[in-house]
Length: 163
Image (cartoon, rainbow, N blue to C red; front, side, top):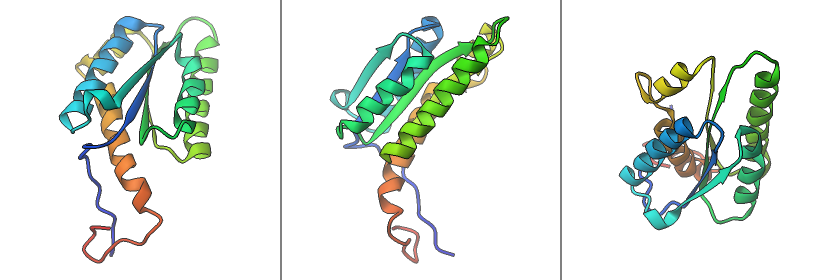
């Protein structure tokens, strides 16, 4: 079997991060985890660009604009949607999920999905540096891995997996 080996070495990568400001206490923690992971993996501070948008619903437009700019190897999307008593939660979750997926499909730029969709604030805090880790850091790692892997997929893997 031949496989494409993956890499989480981010030296030289340019990464844009789009963050929803709504529920900023939590989204700020996601951003901290994301930035720390990008730096740990080798992305320089000058190559991390952050765009704050009003809320999760606005994330796809900013992500598309950044992806189409040609300046970035990957985009990380971060935000928080917390269930309330109305169907609004479902509409926002569907919109941001579908929108981010379409950006990746339409631009072929890796877009990591770090938008929390939680039932309550405790769940969100647990996933933003609490008991469940930091999903911002996990999204950063996914973005790095896909930025390294995607350009290589148009060629078959080498016998040793180093393609």
